[in-house]
Length: 72
Image (cartoon, rainbow, N blue to C red; front, side, top):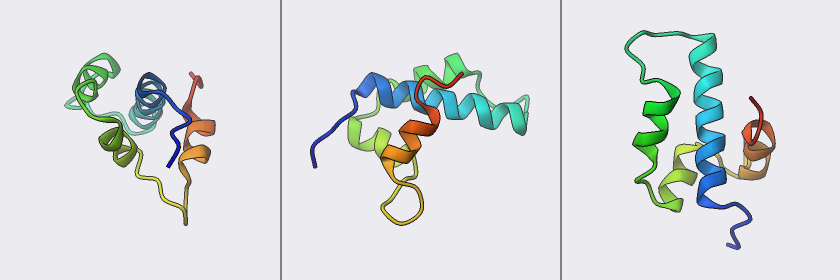
């Protein structure tokens, strides 16, 4: 597979999704967006893609990135 997204773009999208999810379902025990970013910084590109929970049937990686990349 040819990767269209950089590691940093994947991280930015995952953090944007995290902010959205935390806003809708706040839990004081959840890490802050900054803490979450720090946690996922160590993941490989493959692990970051897996963290998006995308597939070709329900939500593709392109759809995920369109939804969360640079949306704040």
